[in-house]
Image 1 (tube, rainbow, N blue to C red):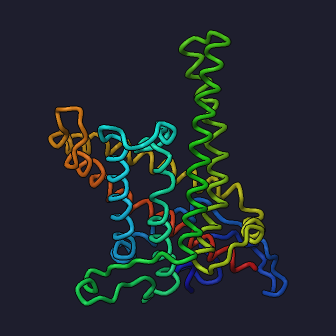
Image 2 (image 1 turned 30 degrees about the vertical axis):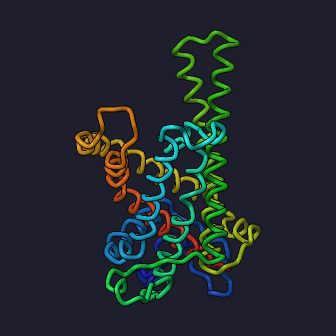
Image 3 (image 1 turned 135 degrees about the horizontal axis):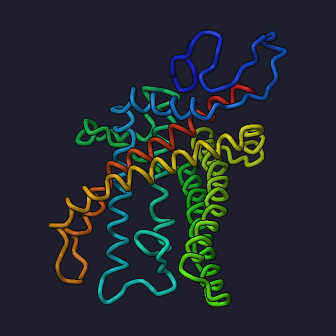
Length: 311
């Protein structure tokens, strides 16, 4: 039979959910369906691998708009004379401004909308531009109420992440000044703070991403429904998103030397901002942006499929 999002599963047993050995009748089965962390991650990888070309066509243009937006924000930050007020600048984002947390989320939400629709209906026409000159490129564009609402949800998460990073840094600085901490102690307390901060942010991210995914699928903004939907699986979902976060970080670290080598010839020797250097820096990151945008959207789509089955 077909598992969530069209993934083939052995007959009589779900890919992602734990089932009791003695199967009761369908009407007697408990509604609680427990996700299996590594099976869920494997299901995401299998789905993305089998549908890579189609997912790329769904997500490439919104991700391209994200890259163009980042280049524009980079110009606003580093242009001379400065174009942004000081209160809008923040080193916790890249580019270092609070605008980064907000300006790119409509395009991310748009990419999610197309991927989630494609998981439900392989021949989805959502957002498809019908102009003759653009039809062959598979161009998709949508700024509907659902996309903008999901973008607001994602922006809230980004802003919260930025605030917690600043609080973490300020607490560490205050402790360093008040207790005259050694360098080793600062490192230990920094790691301890991150060990507390990151799981909290991931937990918030899980809930809000599922909420955003449901908004994009159904247009319904129902926080209580999503909270009930994750009952019994919240720690498992946090583990899944932690694994995705670690995988993203590891891949970025592995690719960083090659990207640095690739863009070094394009970097200007002078200190002024140049379009060529910014394009080299952000366009080299575009494949990874597409990869992780699709991966998170597919994860949310599969989770919603599985958990909705128990309702």
